[in-house]
Image 1 (cartoon, helix red, strand yellow):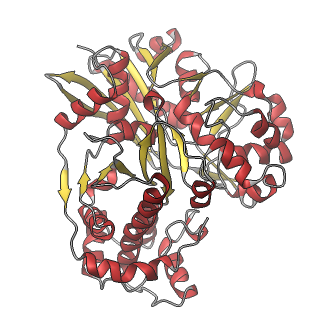
Image 2: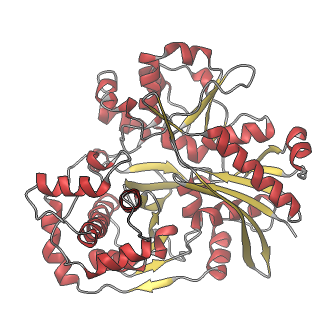
Length: 489
């Protein structure tokens, strides 16, 4: 029986899961979990990528002791990258997408290639940390680093290289960069030229499901590991999460709910219209040549940062207790736009929520419960806002929302989403990202045949909860007030 070792790296933590397909269902066990904390050094925010690779090796070692594995898959967040030289040495730690170096950079880039022209080629939601803007900053401020670099490897590509010595750019992760042409699905020469980078930096693009190599002899000897095959899964975590959406209908909508909330649908071709550009929707690559047509929403980041702030003050809180305090607080008093620039960087999120409300002339939430209620309701309303954009852009009606990922553990958020959007919410599986990773490894091993079977197997393996809309008239009455605080991007 094939055993899969799946690594899932999120923006705040990572884990290793051992899994197999047994009696038509996936069983899995978490064997290693670790924090993923960025490090601020001399004003720059870095990913501690060597520590993260050390944690990966710990997961491999533990998996080897637990009976071994045959295939290994990795998924991570998007846009960020490492640069290696001709000898395969990492030139420096990858910079975190929340670092301030790209503040104001998109406007400088647009002097070379306009916003609409960039979107028309790449179809990617324009965020100041897109890879294209990070590279443009380097070309203007540190050109010597780009000259020393031989290859650019996105974060999962970098881990693949550390494990196997092979250098590829996996399609779904590369598609987040705003460097790929959405029609040809290869690197766009005009975009690279505008960014000031050479085509030579980039590796061959491989599609999810391809075996790219095996664990190196050095890794196997160090960790007592088998010479397992390494699969390029849907290496962008959202691509893996969408694989795991247990939907039977075509044209479904989903929310992959974690630090970011990714609200979208699955299409065969990108949508590159001026309307889509104005809505700032994104066309990212998916498994099997599909397009993930979606919008990035700030998501649980606001809740995570609020909890971290309360804890740093010495307050004893949990996610469950914050949820209960929010539930007890008055409804529909104040709202924020979760995607406002005020909330991008790490820091005192409760104070920023209060600042937004003060700036927009709303009642300022004071208690923990009032602050959390404001965040929860604002997220649910932002989901509705993006749903309306999605309906307008695709011309489709949708019957339900499939909500997957860690956020589905939060029943309060699931219920508020149903209330706000006026649609049933099908919540689960919780472990969608790692399940999509595992499913693609099973496909590479020949144990499942394609995307439809992957989703049927996952639906059999893990329960889904249904939340019906409630109090929709109350939500309708407050929605226009929320919209008045949303900044169109």
